[in-house]
Length: 235
Length: 298
Ligand SMILES: Nc1ncnc2c1ncn2[C@@H]1O[C@H](COP(=O)(O)OP(=O)(O)OP(=O)(O)O)[C@@H](O)[C@H]1O
Ligand SMILES: [Mg+2]
Image 1 (tube, rainbow over the protein chains, first blue to last red):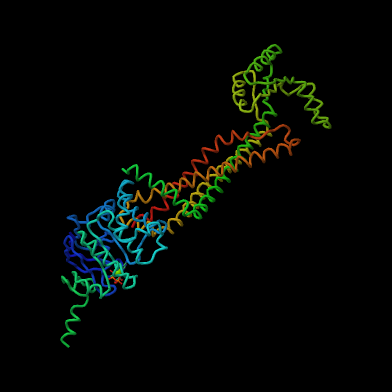
Image 2 (image 1 turned 90 degrees about the vertical axis):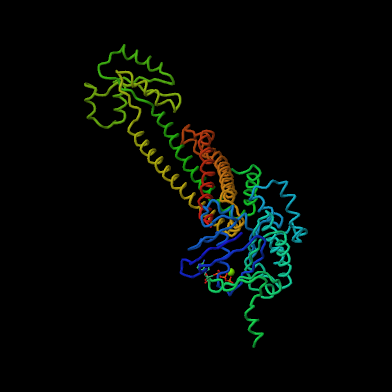
């Protein structure tokens, strides 16, 4: 579903974001991208969204080389990829309901479809009672669940999350993780960058670690710092 | 091609956005209104000076000099012919003698001119009054076809008036042009500020797959609505203040103006309404369009 072939990204100021990276993520996977701050996690995700262009290499999503897409085609790529961020990025002048409905308006859904689907998705993320609230009236967890609802409303096959729990307390973070797992169970491929050891270690999903722009670890059912735990055992 | 449902949604978004960003919308509207008001003012002023000068010109009348050696019969014939030209209200014949005596009248104390009585150099002439300002040119054209006449409808004084008038016209066009540019720049800047404040929203929309069109349309609608409302407001202000001011001026200055009237408001509005509407909505549309362009490139 997602393939990177020798992908490098050097920013215009010379900073290296990603260094000749090969990667393949299959349909339905749940992948954590871990690594130190500045290692290149966000760079990888931004490349997938075609927010930035790779300096070298091919990025193939859904059998299309997205580096070859024209500017006009980018919106259609992004409709196949739901996104959530650390800072939620909801439209501040729209209610929860309107924020989610907005994503459907973008793809040209009918009013009937919108009226039918939005409440269902809001129910799914547990926000049915907050539909009429504005983002500033919500807790961080509720805002992130709104963002999740928006990301999945159009049945995008891929969900990209850049530190979605970064601004949330542990309990709320787990609510979001449970939502994400539910979404993954419905067949959505999830790529999530994170710093949170506990989450990574508990969920036992595939873990890809990036260090200074290169993949240094790729483990199924991995933990955040497997090597360290390993060495600690032997000390 | 966008679906009808989507268009409806984006139109509504534009209107709602207008309300949600009403402070900036008001600032933009204020700029356009001011620009159109000054434009309207300079147009009203220019066109009235034009109008009043034409009236003064009419009072001066048209003078047609009769060529030397034209006999009495021919002159009578000419007089009838001139009176028959459409829109001629009054024809006065001034004989060589009458011309000389009125000339002497003006030069009372100057004995030198006594000599002229013997050999009068002044030509006979017709003075023609036209029934309405706008037909003056037409009548002059008809008179020009008569070979026995040499028609001048601009005396020296009117020549100067015309020059002043041209200058004023020229200046008011220059001011209007400059105002349109200034208005456009101000509007673009105000909308740029709105767009800048909302750039995060635009960014978010792009992230979830909105096309440029989809993002741009509500902004354009906002701009056009602001422009149109501003134009309407400016027009109302101009109508009210023009009627009020011309009324006051006519009653206050009745002695001075001596029957001169201002251009009727209907005349002014006939030109000003479409111009204001086009400039207003145009500034709104172009302003929004330019302001948002940069931010769409994400
Ligand atoms: N727009 C940019 N211009 C220049 N350099 C950049 C830009 N964005 C990121 N970088 C650099 O690229 C490298 C990777 O950054 P990236 O944001 O991908 O890290 P990250 O792993 O997401 O870090 P964090 O965990 O702090 O979010 C860093 O050295 C960073 O300074
Ligand atoms: Mg990051």
